[in-house]
View (tube, rainbow, N blue to C red):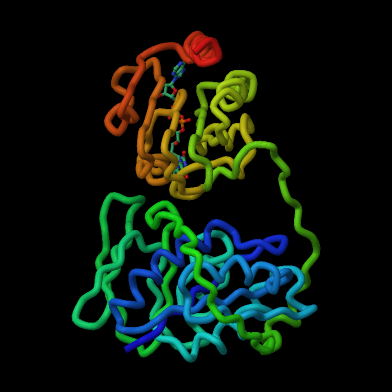
Length: 321
Ligand code: FAD
């Protein structure tokens, strides 16, 4: 029997949506191991966010708040997460920037095997079997972990967000375990957040992405379409590298991984590194003037056309509908 600990991600006193994917994992993994799951809510505003975490059927909500956790620094968070994690068989978070930064440190402290960015979990002989994409999603690795504690990060787009079921889990306060030695060499300087009225790229239901073909007209062409669809804007790496779009919009192997209900790939060729970040989307629409562009192999709807003529037409059509 083993219990599962979900490491929640907190921002401004709220659970980030990434947490809901890790909860979905825990809801599946804990019964398979004959245990329960708890949620660790750590950081500034954790007390407030704990109330939100109570509705998912967790055995306990463990809350850690301390003045030195005000701004996220992995070296301050990892010792506490590892100390709490000692009492569990599996520690799980989401493979967001936060999870990718924090969880390997937690695994190292626990001497735990680490399966990163998994897309599937299956019970197997009292243990868990994980599926992990490799080589930009062109191959899958199947693994299981044999250390007494396992650390796992889940790919957000592969685990549907858990919905609260109305429970009222007990809340317990846990003491801050202090910073690691390495924290002496780390100073939090500032957090520069890009404020946008658009939905967050990794959480949007519709994403409108553009490639190198858009050149300096990237925003001029894509923004009206994103506006009428209430969509987030994404970009290929080539568009980001050329300076047509900011790098935080990059979708793909070395960018963000998205799986919206609807994904527009506009003037994007469909290189494997781009597909690695979006091919889990429910419906893919591609607009490209080259009929042989590889993006059409994954597209549900494809339009061989000049984007500069087509996208404004599409916007007009949607507005008129
Ligand atoms: P291009 O390949 O130049 O394609 C432009 C497309 O626009 C073409 O298909 C063309 O037919 C079409 N087009 C041109 N004009 C028009 C028009 N008027 N109307 C309609 N269509 C038009 N890429 C990513 O996107 N994300 C990643 O995370 C990423 N990571 C990488 C990691 C590594 C290690 C490496 C080596 C590469 C990575 N890349 C990534 C880069 C990737 O290989 C491609 O170079 C990149 O995705 C190409 O971007 P693009 O499709 O915008 O440009």
